[in-house]
Image (tube, rainbow over all chains, first blue to last red; front, side):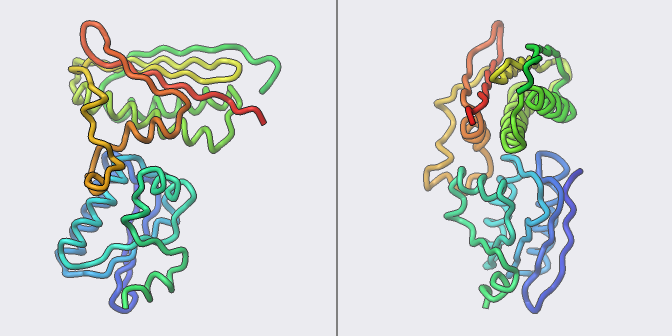
Length: 114
Length: 144
């Protein structure tokens, strides 16, 4: 199964609920397209919920980083929510936990933008 | 591990496609189960095999339909060994920028080798003849 991305608006924050696998090919391009679309629309506060993402490979990690850079360069913020243990491990191994702001609870993630 | 464990080997020549990545991933998980690796270790093996196969298919063979990826999986009583070979132009480990260096943290690519090393007990690269790279990945069962 590839990744499914749905977006919802909570106040002025756009929450992306992702589920499935973010891997080389369809999964990573779907993620890239969603971020690009949001940035084009002018969304600057983006909370990416990875709670239902079962698998990310290095290509998927690359897309997370690229999304972070794209949103930052447009003057916005991309933060992460509800990481599974596997994704947490990947962020530890790759040292990306020093780059991303990560939240366990959605309310805390939303509040952090204001 | 079952007392009746039989050493088992699989050898395949695969096309340079992402379907081959999925095939190798599934085959490695199946062999890992036979050896007796738990789910966490199976996930680690899956991650390393996918990274290695993507390197072979995308970077080594560059999706060239005329080039094949060699896959050999050996299940042994206490370990799993995986060989993955491509027919590309070779690979110099030292030429890969350190993905953990501060200035490289925001690079989009270059983390595959780091993940393979993190998730496996052994990860060795060697040159193939006449061309290409052979990677040997080994995961050992931990004594409980």
